[in-house]
Length: 123
Image (cartoon, rainbow, N blue to C red; front, side):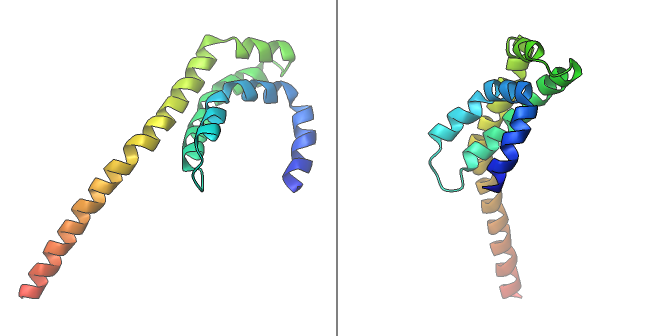
């Protein structure tokens, strides 16, 4: 309830920024619909990378005075879209690639620990 009470005045003051973020954060919304797991790690990974990709567009919007015209220009900017989509793509890649890499690392570390313990047992 507190977040909602804080979000309403902030979104009213920063409406052009909220509109730009709403449009550029579409990949995160798709991830939210697709991810049904507890904890929603997929949404967090894609969302954080997507947010990082939208930062240049938001900074550009703030540099132009945070007007609706500048917000619409940001929404139609190909480079803003490319940054947001590529960053969210990196989030998808991190989510799918990192678990097997970590599992392999843990397997190698476990085998090394087993070998170390067997050597200690022999002594």
